[in-house]
Amino acid sequence: MTDISRLERLQALDNDAFKFQRGIERETLRVDGAGTISQAPHPETLGSALTHGSITTDYSESLLEFITGVHNDSDELIEELDSLHRFTYSQLKGEHFWAGSMPSRLPEQEQIPIAQFGPSHSGLMKTYYRHGLWHRYGRKMQTIAGLHYNWSLPDAFWEQWAKSNGGSDNLQDFKTKEYFGLIRSFRRHSWILLYLFGASPAMDKSFLDDENDNLESLGEETLYAPFATSLRMSDLGYSNRAQKDLFVCFNSLESYADTLVKAIKTPYPEYEKIGIKTATGYNQLNDSILQIENEYYSDIRPKRVVGSGETPIHGLRDRGVEYIEVRCLDINPFEPLGINKSQMNFIDLFLLWCIVQESPMIEPTECSLLRDNSERVALMGRKPDLGIYFNGEIEPIKPLSERILKQIYQFAEVVDEHEGCTRYREACTEQLAKVRDENLTPSAKILQKVQQNGSFSATMLQRSEALSRYFAALELPKEKHAEFTQLAEQSWLEAKQKEEESIGDFDTFLENYFKQ
Image (cartoon, rainbow, N blue to C red; front, side):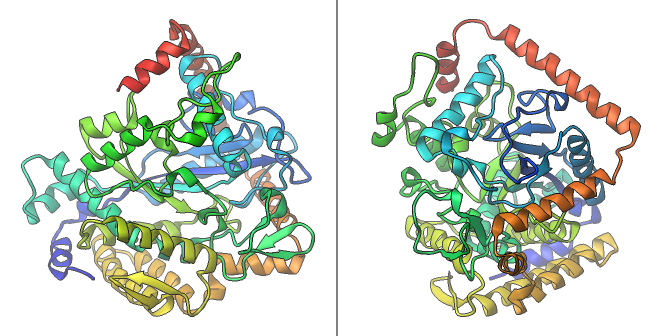
């Protein structure tokens, strides 16, 4: 599984190579005191959801999203994420951050508010894209919250890694190729993250409109799967019939980009029936398999910061991969920020391990089997005799997980030696304990609480109230509060500028966007 020569090359790198660069995007629903999704607009004092770089909304007007900067110091990352939570909580009026990934008790579809981004062309595009998600998948599916982990390695790593691995003269091309190798390795092993960090084994019955044979009832309002780790990451969470047969290839940047562009240009019969334009706006941006690249759901994405109006695919093709985005992480209801430093340290290790693995190309047949792995672990990951497809065979999940974690521990030793610490070995040891005892996993702990209370929503409301008490007791320093207030005010000025710059009609703007 591990190419020892590549591990030895890793050990030979100097300390600067191991300054992991990471950022976090954390989503959370705003709910009222009864645990019902908020009908109130995004608070004006938080700034413009369109232009604020750190506090925005996702699908729903009630689905907050916190976005940190990039940090190579995990303490600084946690500090920024904490400050974003504290400032935002100070601006809420009688509302809570919902503690879990699966949503609170939901009203009818049309009562779930869609995020509004103002009348500028870019703002309208964001809102109409969400209209498309509504008409294609329903609004309920878009209320799920997750945590995205953005990760990259510094130039000091890439310069040394390229030299030791015979990389090309073009460092960016080498980085892009290696990041795609990381992604392929990740897709072969990401099921282990669902087991270790999945935290959504139950949901409120209001989330589903139809019965599901994979779930059992608990009382009158809760559904759960006895061995589930992450219903969020199962087909019960993000389900998409149109994408089932879409083979988005991660074998190279060229094939990845070509496949997504083709999906954006290929009409889908069911979406053609929806129609695009209405008398008052748009039902969707187009009637293709994908409206835009972001509609393709994957547990990991290659990413790059792009300019205003630039498509993600254009940015990747033009300048290569800058970082990767891990998208399969549930919100941990037991952590105020949804994640802790030990989990971050392990994810750093896991991604480093992925980049050092041999990662052959993924063919369509294997791609389907890897999807099956994720679905099985999401629904039945804590089942002791669960089988995982691995290297052409089916292996029991527990011994396979332990074998992988012992390999990752070797990388923990390398990083700890370079950093002069023990935290990476400690993080790995903590995860190994979960493999040996599934009752230590977040999903098992949450399900135990839900079964004790007899209700998913009641349990998550208790956790949400505890979060409110936690953030209410932590007063943000005055200078930090003033800084966030200034950022909010500046974001409104930037939003106004976008409105003034929106010359011409929206139809032409959209047409030009897709011409890229």
